[in-house]
Length: 274
Image 1 (cartoon, one colour):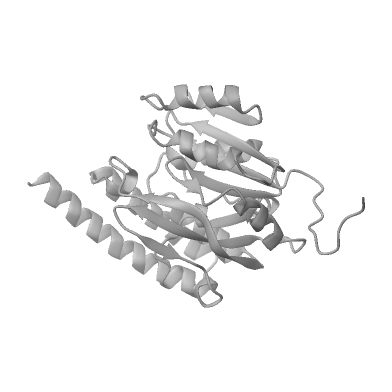
Image 2 (cartoon, rainbow, N blue to C red; image 1 turned 60 degrees about the horizontal axis):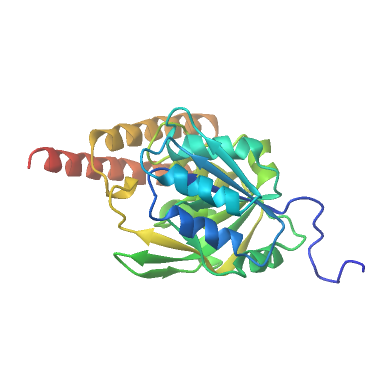
């Protein structure tokens, strides 16, 4: 049977779905099952265990026995989410990379099939994804043409994270777009680089991810000086990027990060002085 009219022509693995696990024993099985239950089958699942100290690895190994298509990698030293994602990207073979945090899940069993149809044969550098926030708060975030411009992403996007986008792997490789390692808030530089260097994009205006908000001991709920130090490192890298290739958007990002650095510093010292 020949290729159906309007159907994507896929010559290789379509998606590399990357999950990073660190001390999420109560969530990792849900995340993996949400991938393995997909009706679309042309994907690879890459899981990196970033030196978990709980039962995360045991849960992953148990599921590796159940699902034979998992590429499992375990770090000998903790490199945080950025380092773990870089490790996975080095072995990824898919046309597109989709990040899934280990405490989150895909929306439903047909969502990767739907995403594949959205991409079609157009080969966009980035696809902006809808997602639903669950947990200690509820919010539905659906991308629109107005919220997917480069200026909007720099100035107003509340969620500059890598998992709310689907990335063309060759685009990331050609532009040497990687995560800073051993650093909190590694998303900022990766997403800024990816969005600003992209030449074309598409929009998946439906929920692809379900994001878990308020998980105890998650990076976003932890307050310490390391958070402040890593925000300053991001600012230094952004200033270097500004000198190398100026855009109006980088000034917007810098102002936002300076404001965030002040807030994190205030929050940290309030916590210390309690």
